[in-house]
Image 1 (cartoon, rainbow, N blue to C red):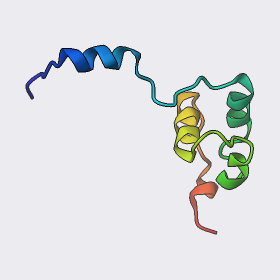
Image 2: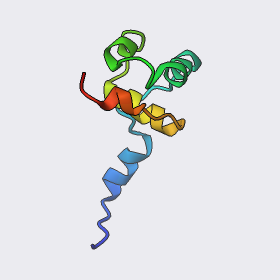
Image 3: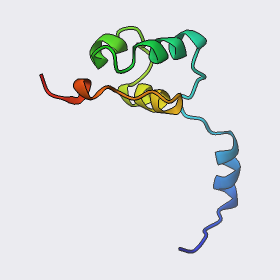
Image 4: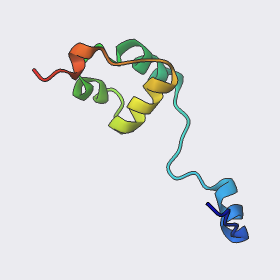
Length: 74
């Protein structure tokens, strides 16, 4: 694949962060303690400003995995 360079977009990309805000220590602690131990809707109640995907990505980043029982349909 050819490398495409668009200087204007490179400059914008240096500072662009759409709706990214750092995770608080409390948010990270909630994910660390409860991710994979409670159903996602229950967890999301306590992380109202985070999407399910954001929580899943954060959980993976800190080494959390959902338990297989949480992945099985009821």
